[in-house]
Amino acid sequence: MKKIKKYNKEAIVEAISSMDQSTFSDLGNSNIDEEDLLSMLNQEINPDTFEDKTILGIDIYHYSQYKPLEQALIPILFRIIFEQVASLCILNSSYIFQKYKNTETFDKLFINTGDGGFLVFDSPIHAVAYTINFQMVVRYYNSSRFYPKLRKIIGPLGLRYAMTTDKIYRLDNNFYGSAIINNSRILEKDSLNRFLLDENTYQWLLQEINGIENLQLISINQLKKLSVFQDYEEISEGENEIYPEKMGYNFDKIITSDIQKIGKIISKSTPLSIYNLHLQFQGSLSNDNQKVIVSLGNLNATGIS
Image (cartoon, rainbow, N blue to C red; front, side, top):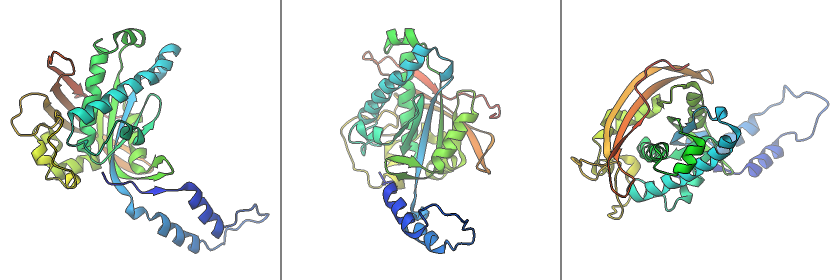
Protein backbone atom coordinates (compact mmCIF):
# COMPACT_ATOMS: atom_id res chain seq x y z
CA MET A 1 0.00 0.00 0.00
CA LYS A 2 1.67 3.20 -1.18
CA LYS A 3 1.68 5.97 1.38
CA ILE A 4 -0.35 9.10 0.71
CA LYS A 5 1.55 12.39 0.80
CA LYS A 6 0.79 14.02 4.14
CA TYR A 7 1.20 17.60 5.32
CA ASN A 8 1.00 19.25 8.71
CA LYS A 9 -1.34 22.23 8.61
CA GLU A 10 0.43 24.11 11.40
CA ALA A 11 3.81 23.72 9.70
CA ILE A 12 2.47 25.00 6.37
CA VAL A 13 0.72 27.97 7.99
CA GLU A 14 3.88 28.84 9.91
CA ALA A 15 5.95 28.71 6.72
CA ILE A 16 3.46 30.94 4.87
CA SER A 17 3.35 33.44 7.75
CA SER A 18 7.13 33.68 7.80
CA MET A 19 7.16 34.88 4.19
CA ASP A 20 3.90 36.81 4.00
CA GLN A 21 2.24 39.68 5.85
CA SER A 22 0.34 38.13 8.76
CA THR A 23 -1.08 41.34 10.24
CA PHE A 24 -3.95 43.45 8.94
CA SER A 25 -2.88 46.30 6.68
CA ASP A 26 -4.52 49.66 5.93
CA LEU A 27 -3.41 49.41 2.31
CA GLY A 28 -3.91 46.81 -0.39
CA ASN A 29 -0.88 44.97 -1.71
CA SER A 30 -1.93 43.99 -5.21
CA ASN A 31 1.51 44.72 -6.66
CA ILE A 32 3.43 42.59 -4.19
CA ASP A 33 5.88 40.00 -5.55
CA GLU A 34 4.77 36.53 -4.47
CA GLU A 35 7.47 34.52 -6.28
CA ASP A 36 9.41 33.65 -3.12
CA LEU A 37 6.31 32.24 -1.42
CA LEU A 38 5.19 30.43 -4.59
CA SER A 39 8.62 28.83 -4.97
CA MET A 40 8.62 27.68 -1.35
CA LEU A 41 5.10 26.21 -1.58
CA ASN A 42 5.88 24.37 -4.79
CA GLN A 43 8.93 22.88 -3.14
CA GLU A 44 7.19 21.97 0.12
CA ILE A 45 3.92 20.68 -1.28
CA ASN A 46 5.12 19.47 -4.69
CA PRO A 47 1.79 18.32 -6.16
CA ASP A 48 3.63 16.24 -8.78
CA THR A 49 4.37 13.73 -6.00
CA PHE A 50 0.71 13.19 -5.08
CA GLU A 51 -0.27 9.52 -5.40
CA ASP A 52 -3.02 8.24 -7.67
CA LYS A 53 -5.64 6.46 -5.56
CA THR A 54 -9.07 5.03 -6.24
CA ILE A 55 -11.92 6.55 -4.25
CA LEU A 56 -15.07 4.54 -3.62
CA GLY A 57 -18.05 6.73 -2.81
CA ILE A 58 -21.06 5.18 -1.05
CA ASP A 59 -24.29 7.10 -0.56
CA ILE A 60 -27.53 5.99 1.10
CA TYR A 61 -30.18 7.17 -1.31
CA HIS A 62 -32.90 9.56 -0.06
CA TYR A 63 -31.50 9.66 3.47
CA SER A 64 -33.22 13.01 4.10
CA GLN A 65 -36.62 11.46 3.39
CA TYR A 66 -36.41 9.00 6.27
CA LYS A 67 -38.28 9.85 9.49
CA PRO A 68 -36.28 11.37 12.40
CA LEU A 69 -35.83 8.07 14.26
CA GLU A 70 -34.66 6.30 11.12
CA GLN A 71 -32.33 9.20 10.28
CA ALA A 72 -30.74 8.84 13.73
CA LEU A 73 -30.39 5.07 13.31
CA ILE A 74 -28.99 4.96 9.78
CA PRO A 75 -25.48 6.17 10.73
CA ILE A 76 -25.45 3.43 13.39
CA LEU A 77 -26.59 0.86 10.84
CA PHE A 78 -23.96 2.09 8.41
CA ARG A 79 -21.34 1.59 11.09
CA ILE A 80 -22.53 -1.98 11.74
CA ILE A 81 -22.30 -2.75 8.01
CA PHE A 82 -18.96 -0.98 7.68
CA GLU A 83 -17.35 -3.06 10.43
CA GLN A 84 -18.84 -6.29 9.06
CA VAL A 85 -17.52 -5.53 5.56
CA ALA A 86 -14.04 -4.73 6.88
CA SER A 87 -13.92 -8.15 8.55
CA LEU A 88 -15.16 -9.88 5.39
CA CYS A 89 -12.50 -8.19 3.27
CA ILE A 90 -9.70 -9.31 5.55
CA LEU A 91 -11.02 -12.87 5.95
CA ASN A 92 -12.51 -13.59 2.53
CA SER A 93 -10.32 -11.48 0.23
CA SER A 94 -7.11 -12.13 2.08
CA TYR A 95 -4.65 -11.63 -0.77
CA ILE A 96 -5.66 -8.21 -2.02
CA PHE A 97 -6.37 -6.90 1.48
CA GLN A 98 -3.23 -8.31 3.09
CA LYS A 99 -1.97 -4.75 3.74
CA TYR A 100 -5.00 -4.16 5.96
CA LYS A 101 -3.73 -5.55 9.24
CA ASN A 102 -7.06 -5.09 11.02
CA THR A 103 -10.44 -3.45 10.63
CA GLU A 104 -9.08 -0.17 12.02
CA THR A 105 -7.09 0.24 8.80
CA PHE A 106 -10.36 0.80 6.94
CA ASP A 107 -11.32 3.45 9.50
CA LYS A 108 -8.12 5.38 8.81
CA LEU A 109 -8.89 5.42 5.08
CA PHE A 110 -12.55 6.43 5.45
CA ILE A 111 -14.15 9.86 5.12
CA ASN A 112 -17.45 9.64 6.99
CA THR A 113 -20.43 11.67 5.75
CA GLY A 114 -23.01 10.12 8.09
CA ASP A 115 -25.21 8.68 5.36
CA GLY A 116 -22.24 7.14 3.57
CA GLY A 117 -18.72 8.25 2.85
CA PHE A 118 -15.58 7.83 0.80
CA LEU A 119 -12.96 5.09 1.06
CA VAL A 120 -9.40 5.32 -0.24
CA PHE A 121 -7.96 2.31 -2.08
CA ASP A 122 -4.78 1.59 -4.01
CA SER A 123 -6.67 0.48 -7.11
CA PRO A 124 -10.11 -0.21 -8.65
CA ILE A 125 -9.44 -3.93 -8.02
CA HIS A 126 -9.54 -3.29 -4.27
CA ALA A 127 -12.56 -0.98 -4.54
CA VAL A 128 -14.61 -3.52 -6.53
CA ALA A 129 -13.94 -6.28 -4.01
CA TYR A 130 -14.91 -4.00 -1.14
CA THR A 131 -18.11 -2.90 -2.91
CA ILE A 132 -19.15 -6.52 -3.53
CA ASN A 133 -18.73 -7.35 0.15
CA PHE A 134 -20.66 -4.20 1.08
CA GLN A 135 -23.53 -5.02 -1.25
CA MET A 136 -23.63 -8.60 0.00
CA VAL A 137 -24.11 -7.43 3.59
CA VAL A 138 -26.75 -4.90 2.51
CA ARG A 139 -28.61 -7.64 0.61
CA TYR A 140 -28.73 -9.84 3.71
CA TYR A 141 -29.95 -6.82 5.71
CA ASN A 142 -32.58 -5.83 3.13
CA SER A 143 -33.91 -9.40 2.96
CA SER A 144 -34.24 -9.57 6.78
CA ARG A 145 -31.39 -12.05 7.16
CA PHE A 146 -29.10 -9.65 9.06
CA TYR A 147 -30.42 -7.50 11.95
CA PRO A 148 -34.07 -8.27 10.99
CA LYS A 149 -35.58 -6.23 13.84
CA LEU A 150 -33.55 -3.16 12.85
CA ARG A 151 -34.55 -3.81 9.24
CA LYS A 152 -38.22 -3.70 10.25
CA ILE A 153 -37.73 -0.36 12.04
CA ILE A 154 -35.58 1.41 9.42
CA GLY A 155 -36.70 -0.33 6.24
CA PRO A 156 -34.55 -1.30 3.25
CA LEU A 157 -31.48 0.63 2.11
CA GLY A 158 -30.97 1.91 -1.43
CA LEU A 159 -27.35 2.64 -2.34
CA ARG A 160 -25.47 4.39 -5.10
CA TYR A 161 -21.76 3.96 -5.68
CA ALA A 162 -19.04 5.82 -7.58
CA MET A 163 -15.40 5.02 -8.32
CA THR A 164 -12.88 7.68 -9.31
CA THR A 165 -9.12 7.46 -9.74
CA ASP A 166 -6.89 10.52 -9.42
CA LYS A 167 -4.50 12.40 -7.13
CA ILE A 168 -5.14 12.80 -3.40
CA TYR A 169 -3.16 14.04 -0.40
CA ARG A 170 -3.56 14.38 3.35
CA LEU A 171 -3.62 17.52 5.47
CA ASP A 172 -3.30 16.41 9.08
CA ASN A 173 -5.79 13.51 9.25
CA ASN A 174 -8.09 14.62 6.42
CA PHE A 175 -8.01 13.58 2.76
CA TYR A 176 -8.25 16.05 -0.12
CA GLY A 177 -7.80 15.99 -3.86
CA SER A 178 -9.49 15.81 -7.24
CA ALA A 179 -10.35 12.10 -6.87
CA ILE A 180 -12.60 12.94 -3.90
CA ILE A 181 -14.07 16.08 -5.47
CA ASN A 182 -14.94 14.25 -8.69
CA ASN A 183 -16.44 11.32 -6.81
CA SER A 184 -18.71 13.58 -4.78
CA ARG A 185 -19.95 15.38 -7.87
CA ILE A 186 -20.65 12.14 -9.71
CA LEU A 187 -22.69 10.81 -6.78
CA GLU A 188 -24.67 14.05 -6.60
CA LYS A 189 -25.65 13.77 -10.25
CA ASP A 190 -26.99 10.22 -10.06
CA SER A 191 -30.62 9.58 -9.18
CA LEU A 192 -30.89 5.96 -10.32
CA ASN A 193 -28.83 4.08 -7.70
CA ARG A 194 -26.10 3.13 -10.15
CA PHE A 195 -22.43 2.19 -9.88
CA LEU A 196 -20.65 4.96 -11.79
CA LEU A 197 -17.01 5.25 -12.87
CA ASP A 198 -14.91 8.10 -14.19
CA GLU A 199 -12.65 7.97 -17.25
CA ASN A 200 -9.48 7.43 -15.20
CA THR A 201 -10.92 4.33 -13.53
CA TYR A 202 -12.15 2.99 -16.85
CA GLN A 203 -8.73 3.54 -18.44
CA TRP A 204 -6.90 1.94 -15.49
CA LEU A 205 -8.92 -1.25 -15.87
CA LEU A 206 -8.52 -1.15 -19.64
CA GLN A 207 -4.74 -0.96 -19.37
CA GLU A 208 -4.29 -3.38 -16.47
CA ILE A 209 -6.80 -6.18 -17.20
CA ASN A 210 -7.78 -5.43 -20.82
CA GLY A 211 -11.13 -3.93 -19.86
CA ILE A 212 -13.56 -3.89 -16.98
CA GLU A 213 -15.59 -6.68 -18.58
CA ASN A 214 -12.74 -9.04 -17.67
CA LEU A 215 -13.36 -8.64 -13.94
CA GLN A 216 -15.43 -11.82 -14.19
CA LEU A 217 -12.43 -13.73 -15.55
CA ILE A 218 -9.59 -12.33 -13.45
CA SER A 219 -7.85 -14.58 -10.92
CA ILE A 220 -5.41 -14.04 -8.08
CA ASN A 221 -2.65 -15.54 -10.23
CA GLN A 222 -3.29 -12.83 -12.81
CA LEU A 223 -3.56 -10.05 -10.24
CA LYS A 224 -0.11 -10.94 -8.94
CA LYS A 225 1.33 -9.78 -12.26
CA LEU A 226 -0.08 -6.24 -11.94
CA SER A 227 2.23 -3.45 -10.80
CA VAL A 228 -0.05 -2.47 -7.90
CA PHE A 229 0.51 -5.93 -6.34
CA GLN A 230 4.25 -6.23 -6.94
CA ASP A 231 5.17 -5.76 -3.26
CA TYR A 232 2.47 -8.16 -2.03
CA GLU A 233 3.50 -11.37 -0.33
CA GLU A 234 2.62 -14.88 -1.46
CA ILE A 235 0.19 -15.98 1.25
CA SER A 236 -1.78 -19.18 1.71
CA GLU A 237 -3.85 -18.30 4.77
CA GLY A 238 -7.40 -17.06 4.41
CA GLU A 239 -9.84 -17.20 1.53
CA ASN A 240 -10.08 -15.40 -1.81
CA GLU A 241 -13.74 -15.31 -2.69
CA ILE A 242 -14.04 -12.25 -4.94
CA TYR A 243 -11.20 -13.07 -7.30
CA PRO A 244 -10.59 -16.86 -7.26
CA GLU A 245 -7.08 -18.21 -6.95
CA LYS A 246 -7.23 -20.06 -10.27
CA MET A 247 -9.20 -19.78 -13.47
CA GLY A 248 -12.27 -21.96 -13.79
CA TYR A 249 -13.43 -21.50 -10.19
CA ASN A 250 -17.18 -22.09 -10.30
CA PHE A 251 -18.47 -20.58 -7.05
CA ASP A 252 -18.23 -17.29 -5.16
CA LYS A 253 -17.20 -15.19 -8.13
CA ILE A 254 -18.15 -12.28 -10.35
CA ILE A 255 -20.50 -13.69 -12.98
CA THR A 256 -21.47 -10.55 -14.93
CA SER A 257 -19.66 -7.31 -15.67
CA ASP A 258 -21.26 -4.87 -18.12
CA ILE A 259 -20.11 -1.34 -18.85
CA GLN A 260 -21.84 1.57 -20.63
CA LYS A 261 -20.67 5.09 -21.37
CA ILE A 262 -23.59 7.31 -20.40
CA GLY A 263 -22.54 10.95 -20.54
CA LYS A 264 -20.51 13.81 -19.10
CA ILE A 265 -20.66 16.17 -16.15
CA ILE A 266 -18.65 19.33 -15.57
CA SER A 267 -16.41 19.39 -12.50
CA LYS A 268 -14.59 22.69 -11.91
CA SER A 269 -14.94 23.57 -15.62
CA THR A 270 -13.51 20.16 -16.56
CA PRO A 271 -15.76 17.64 -18.33
CA LEU A 272 -15.86 14.18 -16.75
CA SER A 273 -16.81 11.16 -18.85
CA ILE A 274 -19.04 8.84 -16.84
CA TYR A 275 -19.42 5.08 -17.25
CA ASN A 276 -22.17 2.90 -15.81
CA LEU A 277 -21.10 -0.46 -14.36
CA HIS A 278 -23.51 -3.33 -13.81
CA LEU A 279 -21.89 -6.19 -11.94
CA GLN A 280 -23.29 -9.40 -10.46
CA PHE A 281 -21.64 -11.62 -7.88
CA GLN A 282 -22.52 -15.12 -6.73
CA GLY A 283 -21.64 -15.97 -3.15
CA SER A 284 -22.92 -16.58 0.35
CA LEU A 285 -22.62 -15.18 3.86
CA SER A 286 -24.85 -17.63 5.71
CA ASN A 287 -23.71 -20.75 7.54
CA ASP A 288 -25.65 -23.10 5.26
CA ASN A 289 -23.69 -21.71 2.28
CA GLN A 290 -26.82 -21.21 0.20
CA LYS A 291 -25.72 -19.25 -2.86
CA VAL A 292 -27.20 -15.85 -3.68
CA ILE A 293 -26.62 -13.47 -6.56
CA VAL A 294 -26.33 -9.75 -5.82
CA SER A 295 -26.21 -6.91 -8.33
CA LEU A 296 -24.21 -3.70 -8.17
CA GLY A 297 -25.67 -0.85 -10.16
CA ASN A 298 -28.20 -1.37 -12.92
CA LEU A 299 -28.47 -1.29 -16.69
CA ASN A 300 -30.38 2.00 -16.95
CA ALA A 301 -28.37 4.08 -19.43
CA THR A 302 -30.38 7.29 -19.00
CA GLY A 303 -28.08 10.30 -18.91
CA ILE A 304 -27.02 11.67 -15.56
CA SER A 305 -28.98 14.76 -14.55
